[in-house]
Every structure is written in C-alpha cells, then in structure tokens.
Amino acid sequence: MKTNKYLINFVIILLLTLTGCKNPFRYTDAREVPVNADERVQKNIEEGRGITLLGGKKQGGVFDFASSNEIWRASIEVLDFVSFTNASYSGGILITDWFAGNVEENSEGSRELKITVRFLSNEIRADGIKVIIHEKNCIDKAKTDCSINKIQSKIGNEIKLAILKKAAILKKESEKKAKK
Image (cartoon, rainbow, N blue to C red; front, side, top):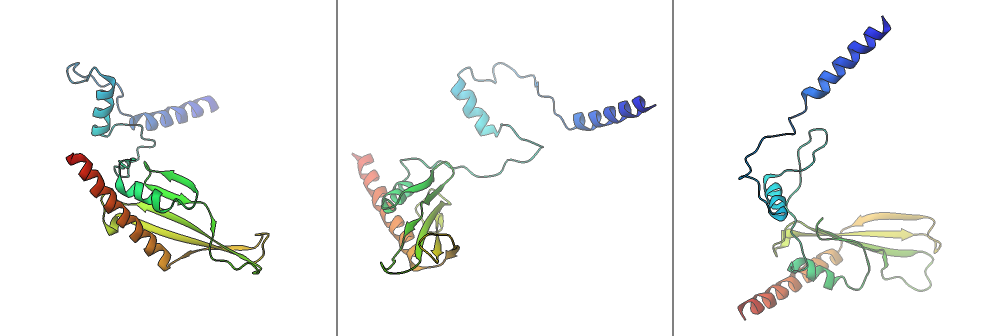
C-alpha cells in the first residue's frame, strides 16, 4: 500500500514538472539557420535566446560599453588617482577602492571615501551617469569601529561634471579623427 502511495505521488510530481516544459527539439528549415557560428550567435542574441531558469523573464538592457565609449574612457581618466575594485563596462559600473579624504595628521580617527559610477546610458548627457559617494568614518586608527554612509556632497557633482566635460572632449577628438 505504501508503494502505491509513493508511486502515485511520484507520477503526480512528474506530470506537474513536465507540463511546464517546452519541446526543446524544434524542427527548423536548414535555410533558416546560418552556417557560420558567429552569425548563429548574433541571430540568437537578436532573438533573445539563452538559458532561463524557473521560467523567469530576461531583464536588463543592452550594455555596449567598450573602450571606444567616451563616457567610459572619461570616467577612467578622471578617476585615475585611485585604484578600482570593480571596473566592468559590460555591467556599466566603476567602483573605486577606499581612499583617504582630507584628514589631519594628528586626528584620532580616519575618513575614507569610495566612489561608484553607474552608466545609465552610453550617450553623453547628464542623466546618463550617476555618481555615488560613500564615506567611511573610523573612530580609531586601527579601524575597528567604523561607520559607512552614503553622502550627498559637492564632490559627486564635481566628478560627474568633470566626466561629462572630458567625455565631450573625447567625442570631439574622435569625430575629428573620423573625418580625416
């Protein structure tokens, strides 16, 4: 009797899981499928194919940030005074390492800053970039008791403005080169 109960439960669970599956083997015409692998990859990307787990929808946008992108290059040049912990142009983000702000020599604690630059667009415009500043204040030099806060300051706006100005200059230079 127990065996039948387990068997029935197994069959019900199996039927429930299989009803959500699509037929992975779709018959296609050979003329529709490109022979070149790069062309097949490009076609699959355009059609939005890929692996989806648990039937979730794919989210996100198109990030074609590259070394030729003026905003990306400008951000790296403006923030070249500090090292990066994350520099992902495919993810559209730059994160600097913690660096010391203006601290007096004789002070007990320390103050460090971290800058995050998010690329919301690959166009040079004020709403296409977001600069976030985090501040870490430590009470002692051993950095055992620290607090981290997101701050709104002039530094963020100044960095954003410097990036946009540098990106505009780089864009003009690239357009001049393209004309030649």
